[in-house]
Length: 459
Ligand SMILES: [Zn+2]
Image (cartoon, rainbow, N blue to C red; front, top):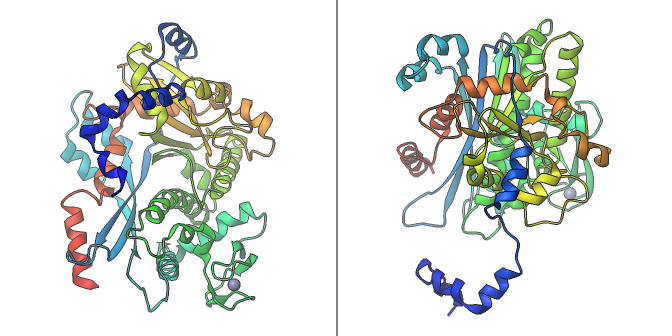
């Protein structure tokens, strides 16, 4: 019998009283409440904000994603299909201002004016399900993901912008090549490295083993698919996160291509909010550097034309930094802001790693962390895109990225978005995010029940 079965919550308190466990914990550093003198130091890291607000852009698009795994039939608990959904919803500031009148915001009225939303959903085979006669869980997942990328297109006028082409666009920044090819890290079947895939409609084969290779293989999510696992939540979780950021890139690309003459005005009049950090972890992490570059290039054009940079905000709602902020928020002064440095993070927030030899989030983040306490006394953690094209020189990047002056042209907009859409219903969240979570949630009733039902009807 496994010892683990004793580790239920009722035995938890006896365990931490155990002298061996106590000795062990004495050897550990972990997130804890700062002492009074540390609080003093922490408060000193915050600076008061006194911005002369510029006018907010009118169009606020929020991008959010969710996932859900359901068994095909109740009596087959390990026979699963997975769903990953991304929703982008548009809220227009002038319509919002017209109904929000200072204090009370009617959620029904808000729901009416955010009807303009777009959603995409990938349905993926998980444990014990074979898709189109594929012989392994990995190949079933790969083919279904490729079919999904093939099927998603945004149509504007007589032009189609496909999500698959957005992958080629993203890769062109990483591989420093044109948009006609992607170099796969390796062939998913034989493992030979650097396999070139062309931007064509025809099916393509690995030149070494002649197995199918797919555009979406570049995301490497199949590496997280478990061949004999009871669930595919690891792979679905990776997809859930990366799809949000790919969709952000897709929106930017579509705006640019469909407004060839005035896309800068479109960007100037836009706020994009990602529900979550501006980072991509795990197998597809390397995409973060393409997105960083894309945003940098757009902003360079905007700034050259004397416009303000594109306002992209990641609203962070979990992780160590949020736990830390929860512990100290009552001690912070209202209307103050901190740009989180690596040194601060190493000292107060992250205890599970040596101070990074390069920089925090070197392989994953494209945005800088800020902690903000508003005039009303609410705290928020948010990310703004790094205003640099790359992290090639990590020593310089590490110090430059958290100098607040680099963000002076964008911070007033971000703070204004947070203040203006502050939501009394929810601590640390703003109205566009609360709404988008409602639209996106597939793991909440009754949406999930509908998906369960669909799964059972169609497989
Ligand atoms: Zn091969």
